[in-house]
Length: 432
Image (tube, rainbow, N blue to C red):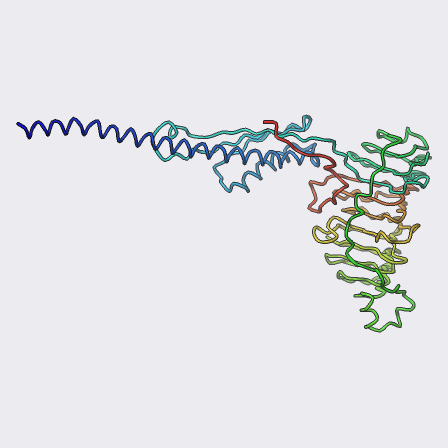
């Protein structure tokens, strides 16, 4: 009987013990799943916040393309998480400059319980873009000269969605006369406007604060300090050692009519002259030392991811009416985003001239801090470019060309240098 008694007692104790152990295990498992799901939710929220912040910044350069903003958000999630089970549902509102992003992911629970019955976790993040775009595509740097931006005859500037700046405090800081026309977001002049404002389809703001040269701190790709001036005449009598001492890789390169050549990056002492010939340029930096880049008399120059650094006397750009020019700036390196870069120590009053009737692709930034850029001719300039930015001491447009300054930055993989283009004083913040 005693044996039976202890058997009954053991049975009575074992059942609650098992139940208790199961309850404890469930409690521990539930706690573990709670912590796991909380961690999953936190990581998912962090991913959503970062994706929303990164994507909303694209509104500065693709404000009319909400689909692109939404694509950037989804692509960021996919590339950062590497988890195809995370689903992104972004919604961009360009007018409010906001992006809402919801992420949904499967729950990862290890134990039976309330969390294992959950199928998914969802989090939402919302970000907005702050500040003003300040999209700058043309700057006349000279602060004292009359007509730092000058347009006459039938010349036109078409700069939809970006701003033109003139630093001159003259009463004719910007001049638009005869039948010239300007189309831009803003024309901001430090002094006054002269001419006919009816020819300007833009908000003309006079007495505008000047703009500091945004590219003044840009490092030069070739140091011409203390090097001798190389001329085409005396250079013919230089030996290889002398040319090497002055940093010359090539000397007095010229292409004549009917000649086609492939050129390589390097220092071109005496410049490059294309007289009716065709030059195909390999990618890289081309230094025009003491000589011009001249394309004329039906000559042609083509290059992808090329940059030109102009240094020394006579180092100018000359593209005449019958020339063909198609160039895009480098993507990386010392000249990233810079199509033409003039040595800041260049003599003042140098002229650079683009009068080609077939210079329709000029992608990148044209930076001529010491000189005037003269654009003339009869046909569109740069109209087949994703974007073109001009910063020059003085800018003049005459005769009948249409200079088209596009701002389709998102369509190009060529970077926009800091200080020009979009994202001036702009930042993003989370609002939810």
